[in-house]
Length: 407
Image (cartoon, rainbow, N blue to C red; front, side, top):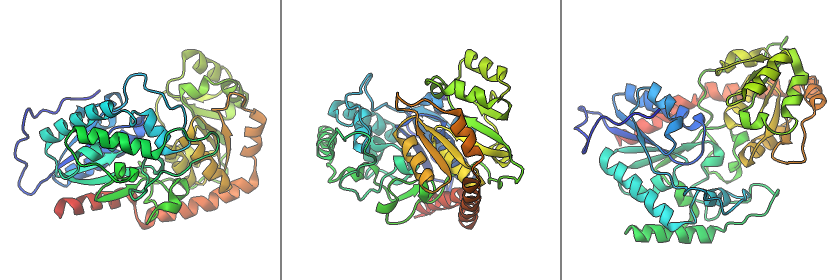
């Protein structure tokens, strides 16, 4: 889906008064990263600036291409089959799985990002879960970090905290710091003095609600809020259905499809990546199956319960709409989101990653009828919609980017 940047060699001179912006996305998968960067990039282009994106996963770049933003394929930090640290208790574990214990892999990534920076010569780099791009851009451009809480820890941290107790941490901060500094030294660059510097910038904008931020207690200022496509509407009093947003991997887990089929005609579902057999079974059970994303502001207004895998985006959407949530967590970020909203009384969180767990449709149906959860969710929705209205996150993020560009 990526398009080549049409400028060969050195960039042409920008129009008078305009500046050049690089959107850089490195780690993580899914359209959430590219969609948010596309929305920011489109606003910066509308303000008269030149914008180009660099993504290490160009197969998720469609939102950027559709926004008219040229896309460059960026280097992948993660070597093929590099999964030697099968743990997730800290962000250090997750970064280790992405290759940040391998100096040679990081050297290749740093060299690739520097080549992109030489070509683009940006005035500002907007970074989304991009630690190697962050290091490569030091002293070369202004940097603003963006991303959900899980992907954007405070840059002041000297160690990444424990996120859960499901398993012990395996990777050590000091080992990662040493590996990163070996890679930087091999490139002729100064080292860093703390792991938080992997997410260092001139500014940082956390694109989620504080409730969904695992580092909320460690930040100097609270998370700024999610970049929603459109404002959420309050759940209607007569809302009765169940809406599910589960990908093909989730539907393939034991018992998931059978549980959803029990919900029958109550169920509306958008299942990206589902097999034809899964789709046929859902339709045979009476569920309404969508083949493309739905306008969540419309769907959630008529929904009694939203069932999803714990993505920060839909968790924030449902929170703002005042809809109770049933979360089938697939991995640690999902688990952290599910546990946070469950602790707030607006969700039930279930460990789909646990091979012993089998979804119980009676539990789903019982939570859909839980009046206490419904009342708490409505109140939480009003609070979170008010936060968004007081300071719209997208406008605020763009304003902070423009302030850096005008500095």
